[in-house]
Image 1: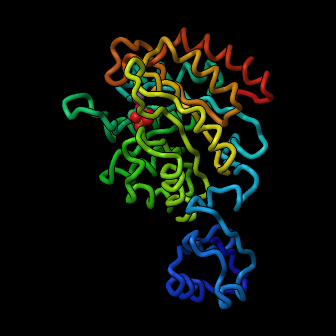
Image 2: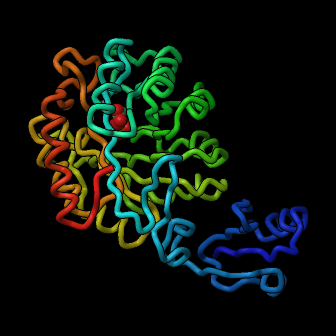
Image 3: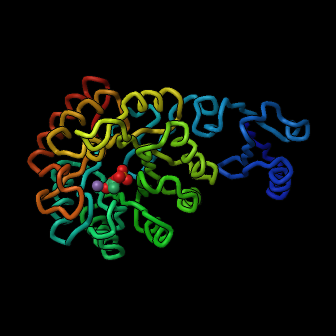
Length: 331
Ligand code: PEP
Ligand code: MN
């Protein structure tokens, strides 16, 4: 149950109520208390101080349409996604920042095509400890230079608690990866910032668990959460993962959060990325994340799935037409 407290309720009073009724308190314009969804009726004491009460079916609460019937809008400075914008934000860049030369090439491709957000990882969550783990802080600094030089927004991922603050400081949009999405330390820290957070779905994570992870960020007071479907593990091994478009339809119907799709990590092979990307855009989505690299063959991570620049340019042209056909526009 979500309770918007009356303006007259002081911070101290709200804290006491939160403790007494075992609820989470956060401020986001209003002071808000969130109790377990199992509680379906507010205690008389709470009713007296409540401005509005929302009852939800499950612990998908702040992210639910029962709470906010419209999709949340997320403003990123020069542009907005979600709400009624019908914008599909294209995000591209290499899997990892590898060198100055490589990231400059990626930034210049964004500028050439009018792509507003450059994405690359500095702290990579690799499956093996013996492979490239990312440039760390040096990678973040290179991304920072791309932001100042080219006016691009930067999205980069937090892998673990050793660098969460660093990533929050450097990124315009913080990515939480599929392997880190259960880390409550990361989720809670992201709840304390007001920067947008792109939360990826773990590859063995149910939709319920996925959105409940988002609740940790939302209930920290950060309303700017974007969900990202990037493929789940099924019996199929010919492709890396299986992009769960049914899940995306469910997220669109039952949550109030913008949804971005990542076909690159889902299929894991460049040959299928353009077709999948067009299928994603045809669903009417808030964004698309595509890995691209100036020379994918020599990429230090996810080499097989990254598009080369020519492939990305061609895809970008075709995405505009698909988006237009379903009443969206590529930004
Ligand atoms: C990535 O975005 O490069 C990445 C490692 O993704 P995921 O967390 O979805 O595996
Ligand atoms: Mn990658």
